[in-house]
Length: 413
Image 1 (cartoon, rainbow, N blue to C red):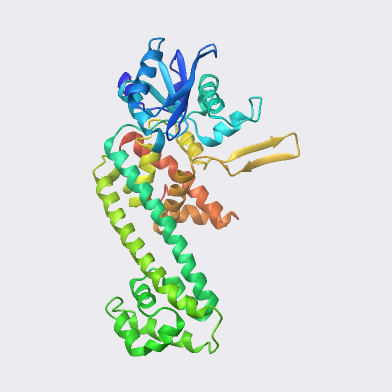
Image 2: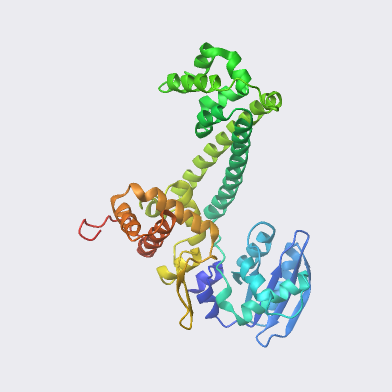
């Protein structure tokens, strides 16, 4: 690792352990103030105080500790409330690392006491860096484009959660008051024509009162190819139920509001997707990532944020383990032997690899590998995990060499 990389704070567990640090500064970050605990190589505390969320105070403490020798700053939250400390340390040329929450909780069990205080957490963070550097993770580079991309990706993730919540609420209400109508509209709830119908006419009573002619006039401009079939399905579903379920009147009032909310959220997601695509296109590795079948704008952006150029992972096995896609061996005597899927890892990265594998099933090479695993008796999800793990080998080589995806020959596939 070059000195330039070290100054930019590009870190991973392996490279961190190869540097001789004089001070390990653990920061349990907070909104108003952090708690800082600094240990020397012998494990003695050289600093243990509350540290205000202030650039001047942070700089003073980091400067003071740097006089003892190389400093490693370890945080439990590298973004959000910990962003100022991370950015300042990077600007001062101080190395950075990140201790994931799950690892921190497990390491905390090794220390006596059950108290949960900021001071204890800061000490555990520093002690983990001093004695167990393999538990640390890298902190993303200070690439401004990646920082902007992370903000938009986080916003899009929040929108996705809201879309799911509102969608489930709409389908739940329709199922409650008119199951037959939900079976028609539920699978198409994100279509503009369906949302406009719900926003304008409400639930089953409003749709029935509107009549075929008004339904057609509303749907036709938004679904010119399928409006006839959609209207016929709605009319048939409405005729299947003659009784009025309690709560229908309230649902007629709530459904239009929910439909308008969902429509607005989908518009915001479309805008966020366009912004993500523009930011991703500006990054030199974007074309490399998206050249691989199954990797689109959102999955490519997530992989880029979590993996970077891949240099932090010596082999594809390290990357698979970080993503939680490497199987873990279980062996004890003669009674327990085998492997099971990993439960840890970076959940967001794991999901991105899994979704990309699912989307790649239209690719002949990926489909052939998936079918082979299915033929071996694996279920759908297990076969997809195997495919995702196989694709990590290819993706790691692509990032390492800066090469575009090269489809294998039929014989190699």
